[in-house]
Image 1 (cartoon, rainbow, N blue to C red):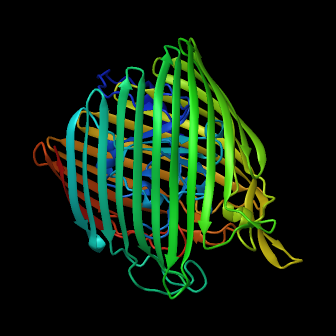
Image 2 (cartoon, rainbow, N blue to C red):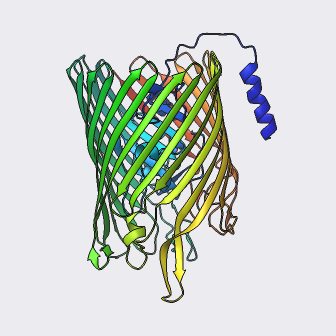
Image 3 (cartoon, rainbow, N blue to C red):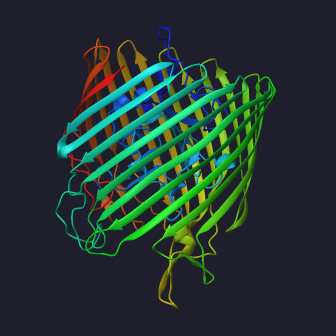
Length: 610
């Protein structure tokens, strides 16, 4: 199968198609280097999800649309609003750095982001950068970076609204207003999503939720975002943004079985052009991750994280195609919890980190180079240095060879350091080194990419057992080697679209030789769509091989394939009608043992734009 697919891609590279013009503008990304460049210029493996992509997917949440990105695997524990883990290139879910308009998100206690609570109606664009980026961002960017950009006002005025209903008494209402002039821009969006859901856990006293509660587990999410910017002078602009998502989720558990959550981000940034060769970016922000668990007559528990960040970045344009970046990052995590965290008999509720980084980009003829270095100074584990180097060579005007090497790290989370009777304050950061080789090509109406990579992760944090005290504790026990390959092909011509990607993965635990849990070895995504007049119809097929739910590889979850369909009809220039059909064949499958996934699902919606 691998040889057949490689032959197919080589055919697309060299076959003599006609040179029909491609009028689509190239996407500009900033996440890969913290400077603006097109996707074609980037030496990183980048996927850009535009607002149009989001609307056509008819997805509700971030994990819904990320599952179609090459190199990403999503594991869900139930339906809407239930826990979702995003594994990028086989690394842990906590090894993915998530930014919202440049502000770092995540829970300091568990060390990862609640992807399931982030609504897509507020999103203008998503940039997914695969591969290590600690040399630019510090902790967490072992697998890569996902940056979410909220809606931004465009020239003139714009109003939009939608209402929809579907299976499981699912309802959604969205509304927004935005606009821009030469001097300022603004956007205001709101979203209300509600569902009765389904029984998210099969019910067992030996695994999963460790209880039997055969009821529907509902979910609701109310969110609001605002973004306002102003060009104060020709060389100076300032922008503020805020997003808040408040949700309530029911789940099955022998302990608490209801969760109230708040995901909230505030930010302020400014761009100042000091000269033709010097651009300054200054930003500050704060993100909140708050959870409150209750129900089953249990005492309420809460874990609230407040993350304060600031950045000062200088870009020096030394000459044509030569850029030097010098930057400073600050981060402080504060924790307020019903659990008391203690370090050496003294309560502790905060950790700060400072990072200094440099990067140099240059282009010489057909070659392109990027070199970066960063040093982080963490209050808990002192200093840590990471770096990266990337090289690109244009084999032809449409084909390029790229290779890169990078190191990264993940700082231990609060729970791993200080949770009572488990935390270990002597933990070291998890460390990684990765190498990648790839080929990319862009023809008149299609583009393709082949990327192979290998990642080695040391000092992985796992649970250890002390026979002397008969207790479990966190320790730097494990190591992993991950090998993989991503192949993607996207073809657009006339009213037809064909988007596809295939990912092969071997995430191996060095200690046991087993596969890392909840990651499929093979993933195939295929979309075929046709736009005819005012109507568009698309079919989406997702297939994954088997995976294991446990580190011992004794609990096997079978492979599966699901078929989805989307239909869109423009009623006139202001109104659209959409139908979303998920899991058309009513396939029963699992990405986490004991946890049900969505069966056949339908949703219809009416959309207004002016």
